[in-house]
Amino acid sequence: MSKLGKIRETLAGRNALYAAVAGVSMLAGCVATVRVPAPAVYVPPPPPPPSASIEVAAPAVAVEVQASEPPPPLPVYDQPPCPEDGYLWTPGYWAFSTGGYYWIPGTWVAPPVVGVLWTPGYWGFVGGVYRFNAGYWGPHVGFYGGVNYGFGYGGVGFGGGVWTGGHFSYNTAVVHVNTTVIHNTYVNNTVINNTTINRTSFNGPGGVAAQPTPAERAAAAEPHTPPTAAQSQHVHEALRNPQLSAKANGGHPAIAATARPAAFSGAGVVGAKGAPPLKPVTPPVNAATRPTEPAHPQTPATRPPVANATVPHAPPAATTHAGAPPPKAAPKAAPKPAPKPKPEEKNEK
Image (cartoon, rainbow, N blue to C red; front, side):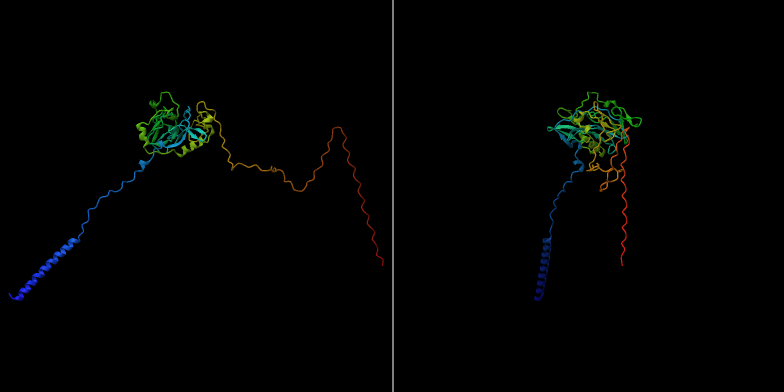
């Protein structure tokens, strides 16, 4: 091989070596620029907000008002008959207002929906004061202090009837129903409380010693409905009636129960045993509609108005006595002679 051929072979080998080195460098560069992402760290999502049904407070523990003295004993009264099919009984109770305790008469009311029952409110002695726990509507009857309100509310549960097939069936053993009008009735005497009836109207020391049963605790956690508008009006009207004040009736209200809410007169009103006679209540006259007395007496409509000019008065009539001669008429004055005409003067020329 000539010298020139050796030189060419050497150059070709170097070029091959340079190409190989360049290829390796390119591969190395490509590998160096690859970024392998780090594995993602799993972060769990925040827990969902608690359900609204869990946060609903049971109305059975909602305190409406409190007092420093206990309520009077429950009055004894008869239940008026149910006025309509589907109405439910709500027992009477003592409410506290600025004038002291007022009796809220028991009454028949229409429930807000089909299938609910009424849990009465009750007074409880807690923390040195008497607190009233509001009543409510619910699927089951909850705790109402163990107070024996009567007519199916003997202290625990309700025995006055049950819902069957969308209709309420009345237990005539404890509630007053006219069976000739309402036919969905039955008789269950096992719910009658044959023990001595305690008229105590509050729970706690000195009153009824009762604690919620497991069934009543479960009923407290169920969804509840507050009193209806008719029930609220019933309470409002009772607090305005002075005859329902315990200070006025001595614990024996003349309106102990009504057939319908806020119907405090007429048929269906029942008084308590030993209550005074019911007095008609006259509503106060509104000052806006009360007629105002004039500052000065008005002229009667039949009398014509008097003019400002002076009116001459007629002379009083002469008084005559029996047997006396009539008074002589006053002599008439002689007429004055007419003046004579003056003679005309002649003009002399």
